[in-house]
Length: 298
Image (cartoon, rainbow, N blue to C red):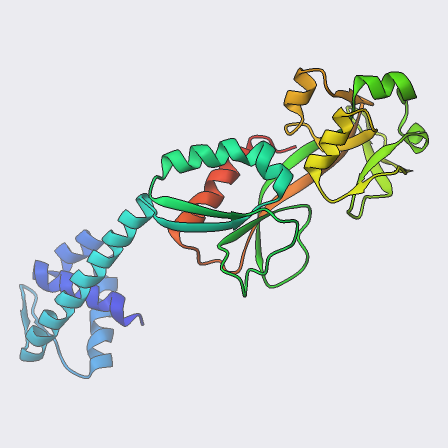
């Protein structure tokens, strides 16, 4: 038994002074409504209604209970309406932790669009390399790239970005262009400070053959995607980068795709929160990014 819901049903019955009309108004069978009101009377221990085949009448307890319940139901309805308005026009400060390179290059125009759509929201962003603590620090959400670690946090997938190998034309002219993934072992590779720092897995496009893992090396090991991309444009080696992130460099001729018939493992993007129950500002932000980034899912 749900007492609050049954109170609402009782109010509808009294307002209609008819089980049949009240059942039609709330969209449940007449028999179900009758059983719910009977269960409510048993739970209270008092009869609320006198019922005959033609009409219903309120008992003294029924009148008092209706007056109290109607105020409660009206307050609850008003609260829902106000929350609905808040959901439609969210406000407040959105505090988010964002991966620096991905945010600067890729998220910035999306954030600008989101800010224009919801002018009531203000923003505080943390773009340091550290993983913020969503439990003890005042962050609403963290956007993370790669598979999230196992924890009690809630990770919502919002995209999977295709990644390829890129290098500058001058580097390829100087070092030669590889024709097979295994030749990468002889090249200067710009490596991220992640699990794939020393071994890159490449997948053939349009073929049924399996992935090839190749051990790579190089003088540069970094934890910044922005720096990886920048060093690649400065002729210092081959890097694995998301194709949407480097689109401008490719269009301008600063970078060229290497091994065009091979792809790196796509990188997942997650929105991580402490809880599933989110304020409207956070839920709208996550939904917006999922909508926009989902179109680019690899």
